[in-house]
Image (cartoon, rainbow, N blue to C red):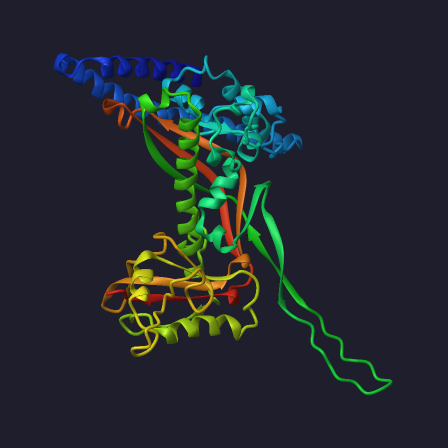
Length: 428
């Protein structure tokens, strides 16, 4: 059944490509009508194909459960260094867009092997974890692309790039990649009690209280659009551009979830909505941040003995702009945001517009957030392989391909006391 659907989808894709190749002045009403029919049918086929795949996956999981043979969730497939160097993300995207993998056999086989090991079909194609972790090219070795490698491409793997793009990672968040199954991390919730004793007597027994922080995979999707002409290129620069672009859109999505996630499935719980963090309140309708608020944020963390580790601030550009123009007191000549590497009271401060600036407080609907804490206590878990879904239909008439990156991620705070937030900061 699924092969029949795929065959029909490939035929439609071929007709859409022919339509796109027509000179716009030569496109008839009949051509346009057929194009619209093809686009609608293509979307229907995508739904039907996904439903078939879901049914197959469910049947496989039930069979494995009954037979006691669980899937191998390790996405590493044992690629050789030569294969990792030859793997091309752009070539795989191009093949998925055209529905023709004849020139991307390595990438197709890698995706199939990941799917086989995980006993799960991708929504598009799997990018093997081997490549995600080990994408460095050997500088100076022509066969490995050494003569063409730019410094940025040599800098690290896709996962390294993703981490570097995440502001929470820059602030010191603990990123755990290549995870398998649900992860439980022990957390001490209270310490043992110390006693003074007289000679010959024993202290009163006490025990530490311990619970667990759970990380379980939740799928985040982020998309970006590329022209077909760009995807026809095979240069190292284009390869680097595409993977940097995908890393950026995923990093933005992860940053937003870690800071403001609602915690309503399937979205992770972000810091702003975590019970137990320190809260600094500006006012009934919000307030402009001042020196007292900055000190109060640090005090909220320090009074719980949590002012250790990777302490820093994260906020948005509006708060930074306001603080750069606001005096610490009255005509001191010193701004809230200092002009140095540790601008907020001697601590690092990171800026991302994933920190919301449309929060509601009383009559104000333009409040921003300002976070402070030990970011090492923020954990970001990443599972399995990157799933790339290529959509050649949405913008097919303009020659644009939409690429959706899907990654299993979760985030959790090890100790809520390690963070404080002001979520009603006004910047006007």
